[in-house]
Amino acid sequence: MKDLSVKDIVRETKGKIIIGNENYICKRYSRDTRKVQEGDCFIGIKGENFDGNMFWKEALEKGANCVIVQDIEFNDEEIKNFRNKTIIKVKDTLEALQKIAEYKRSLYNIPVIGITGSVGKTSTKDMVANVIKQKYKTLKTRKNNNGQIGLPFTILSMQDEEVLVVEMGMNHFGEMRKLTNIAKPNICVFTNIGTSHIGNLGSRENILKAKMEILEGIENPTIILNNDNDLLHKWNIENKNKMNIKTFGIDQKSDLNAENINLEENYSTFYCNINGKDEKINVPVGGEHFILNSLCAITVGLLLNIEIDKIKNGIENFELTEKRMDITEIKNGVKIINDAYNASLESMKASLKVLSQFKNGRKIAVLGDMFELGEYSKELHEKVGEEVIKNNIDILICSGQNSQYIVEKAKEQIKPENIYYKEDKEDILEILKNIVKKDDVILFKASNGMKFYEIAEKVITECK
Image 1 (cartoon, one colour):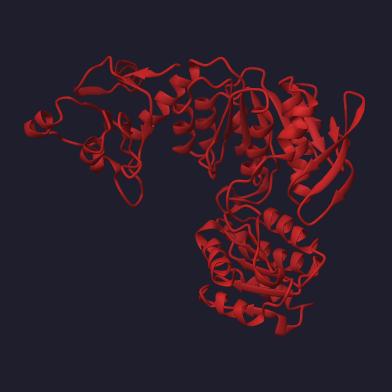
Image 2 (spheres, rainbow, N blue to C red):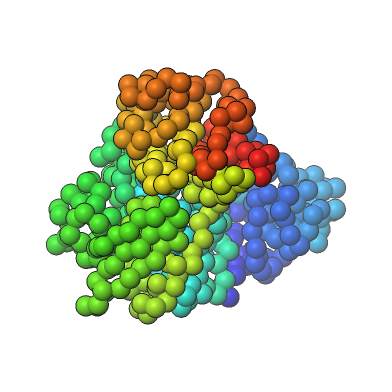
């Protein structure tokens, strides 16, 4: 165990002990008073809509033994009431969180796999971690807590793990640089470079540049990348003689390729040559993008000297984080695909392709807005409309300001009576109640802020 003492925290944050014991050991960390456990160290984080520092008393009353806060003045009565607790005051709690996470990471000499990319980070992280845990004690990012707050809290939860798998996300220049300085990954995975956050960064080339900040300050990392992605393929050609790069792909010749691919509704199989032997890989979810995820997981597993049978078992038995390609069958053979946690052009294309592979019943796509696209919003939503046509979707239902562009493009080839647009997304449920037939397959896909996953859950609840 490599737990930090109050003394360590004060040193790393340049903070001040208001009251308490500098030798107290902090084992668990929390920023949510609803989830505080006995003995926790509570860190008050100041957000856009609330200030977690204001809840320091509640945290202590609920059992936290230590709080780290900023901008709080303590009176004599408060200090007296909490004399058996520890209070640390710092200039900036977010910066303090990151500093102590950076210090805790420095205490571990273990493989750290950092996974970034425009889409597919969470599902790749889930599969990679499941492969690694077949041999090593593994900690992975929970859900998609991949940013300036989530990543440090993941690192602070480290105990006696042998491998750490962290998802690393950003939407502006400089953010990945901060994350990699904290996590110090020695294996860096790139899933793809797409259009997510293009409104903030201006171009796909700038997205690549921002993602590549993951390599800054890292000494001789192993880089694993999706060679089928055009920008990553180009970057590989330019850098393969300068860095330790491992590639995987389906279309481009790579260090690890998938061949003889069989795509089914709920699973896939493929073969790849590993150590001179063609191995059959079974993937428990449909979609070509999960084949790429599997190739990535195999590459990581081989780097960590995991036996091939264990690698295959890790892939065959991995489970996706919720709201990502969750498939639920309700009455009359109707299937709901809840993939509504997030959306970009690339993930829309992948999800629509999965929908197109269902052989029985009509294919219904319920689509909403993609966020953070800026001046590219109209163009990229129109491209989603093209994908709707390309994948022979039978019925299109849209809601959201920019999803009107999906509808306009889809109308070029889909009959108007098979297209619905509603300003209020709550109307979608009523439409589905009236039109759904036996064996239909319904995909829900939109950016998280659209909350289409709530509609998917209502359909499942009310129609089961």
